[in-house]
Image 1: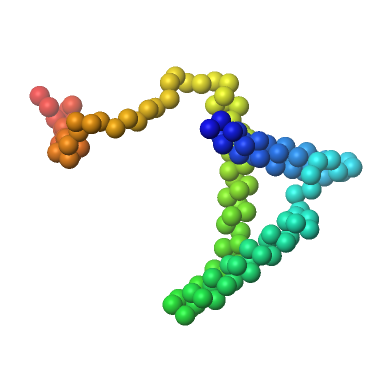
Image 2: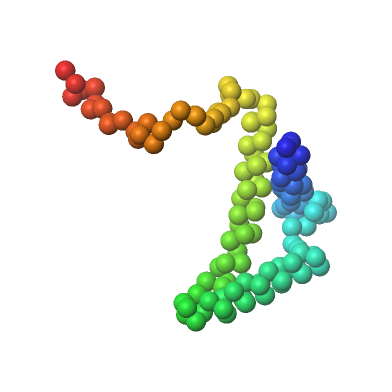
Length: 132
């Protein structure tokens, strides 16, 4: 279980830190340091295969929705933006979550005696200013 939680965090740091180092050295004009964020052979191969797969899906769906082809160019960007966003959020929030825990976590346990009638929320009480 810990391995399943730790591997995405390690992946996020292995993406964010080298890319940040590359970006800083590029902006300073120094010799490039870190991993170049531009995809190389295997990255381009995966990107090409995913674009072909996406085009086949668009081609199959265009009979049902002719306007779906105009979203082809944007659909390719969605996973990339999502991965970058999640990697940055993970890299920023992980130290705070690990070093500064705030109380206990939330546990959800099923209640055995709970019936459908008990799950109905009670009526909302009027605001305190209305009650006299």
